[in-house]
Length: 88
Ligand SMILES: [Zn+2]
Image (cartoon, protein in one colour):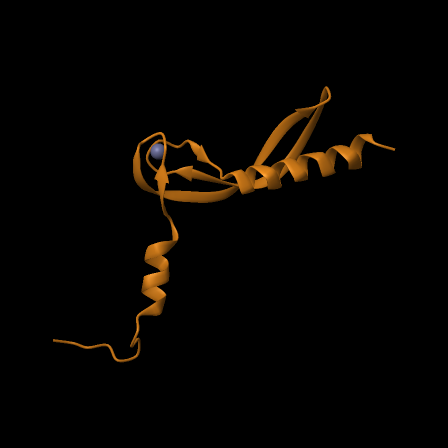
């Protein structure tokens, strides 16, 4: 039996394990999520506005998952970009 005394609490492993599994409402189960930056295009008052945001996608069904908080953050980015581009 080998005991690795260099990682007494194995904190690194624990946090890795906890990081990515989330409930997917489409699969109705827990799956890992891939998180990556994507370009999202929205239409604000008839103008197309593109922003970059981190999107998490279920590794099982590929659908995006956002929380209300993240949705709000994306909307903030969209309107900030809209104001920057189109408002004088
Ligand atoms: Zn899913």
